[in-house]
Amino acid sequence: MIVVKTGGSRGINLDYVLEDIARQTEPLVLVHGASDELNQISEQLGKPPRMVTSPSGYTSRVTDPETLDIFTMVYCGKRNTRIVEKLQQLGVNAVGLSGVDGRLLEGRRKPNIRIVEDGRTKILRDDYTGRIEKANVSLLTTLLDQGYLPVVSPPAISYEGEVINVDGDRAAAVIADALGAARLVILSNTPGFLEDADDESTLIPRISRDGIDEAIATHARDRMKKKLLGAKEALEVGVGQVILGDGRIPEPVTAALRGSGTVIG
Image 1 (spheres, one colour):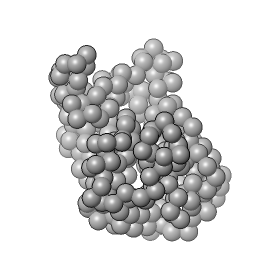
Image 2 (cartoon, rainbow, N blue to C red):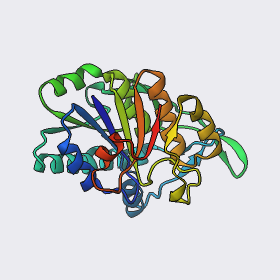
Image 3 (cartoon, rainbow, N blue to C red):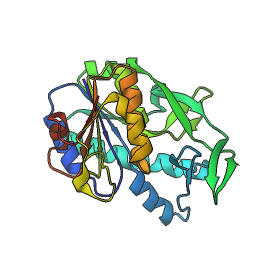
Image 4 (tube, rainbow, N blue to C red):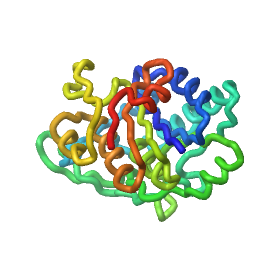
């Protein structure tokens, strides 16, 4: 069992990713993002994205009700449907799902979050972000047993039945745990984890389980912090290996499974 998470940042070649997924022979679940497209459409709709930073240094999107509507439109609508369409063209019987469908991804809403802005710690209220805590594994296994390839996007659903914006990398980690996946592949627009985020020649090919916290503290920036955190959580619950791979190259999943990128674990 493999879980693949493909990011939504600019530069990722989605055609390469999906063509390679169509070649895989092991059971597979695909989790996807759409952050760059969300930013573009938010701008076009007159609702520019607002990003904030937590006291611990993690960046997230402010998700008020209007932003949540745009988020679901882009992630669950346009991007998810187009990915399923492409996989169907490649001969893969894919099924598109959001974390809300069948309570696939459940977690807790964080209506009040602490942020650092202009050097001051503030409380942001009435936000619709949350943290995933579990995946409905029976829904996924039912689909997999019938030969379907699940294509999953955030958002998730809270225990109170509210739609919540959640991190896609952590969603992939929770799904990998629920399915007992041997490997989790996280594809982004870099060769892997870089010692210097601005220099692709500084790829770190391997990080031990014990070295993840140090890597987060010393070298990780922006989205890479959450990717490493997702990797850490996946390994802690029993996923055998996490690979941070390059989503810009041909056969990116195959390359990652062969050890290209950054292998964690």
